[in-house]
Length: 263
Image 1 (tube, rainbow, N blue to C red):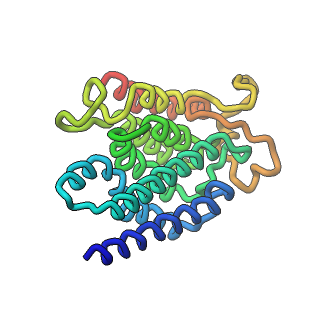
Image 2 (cartoon, helix red, strand yellow):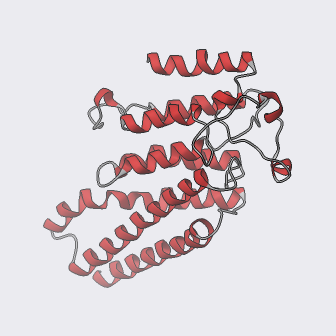
């Protein structure tokens, strides 16, 4: 019945507003201080509960013309869609805050798995949906900047190289068929793909100028979050961090960057 549909839509709207309040408190005005289980639950809620609403404009006209949507349903659905769009805009703002924060080179999302899961979810699920209705490029750029918030080498067993490979693979992903709006069938714009390479090369500091002459990559690689608050930790790219570690530097260039560039 119409009344039943309205009740269900009101419930959905309340859920969306509750998630927005959570993101307001923890990400917009907070620092994303969630435990891994909370991050995973939030990402699943965004994926299963909210991401389908990004398809709303594509199916609305057809359903409305067919008489499947009443006026009251239309108003509620448009309000839900608007709130979902604002919510993902807030997530984008949070990622930019992470990439520009005074806490750099340490990310607000401390858990590596949660951070990677969020980045891949946004690139694989949300950006393709936004590409049809809005600005997917700005969200993808925010993800690229957030992905490389790392000013030290925490992965002495080679996982750092996996992170670099994953970043370039995601940035240069292709869409099968004719679903891509970019030449070559890429999922992301040339600006996003370029940002992925730049984020692995460019060093960050307030003056925008790198001064690496006195920096020893080997010593920087041993910095921890605990020692960060007792010393001045430079925020360096993986390229700079490995420049005095010849084997790692060559691996970064020969096995990670060049294959992606040639491809």
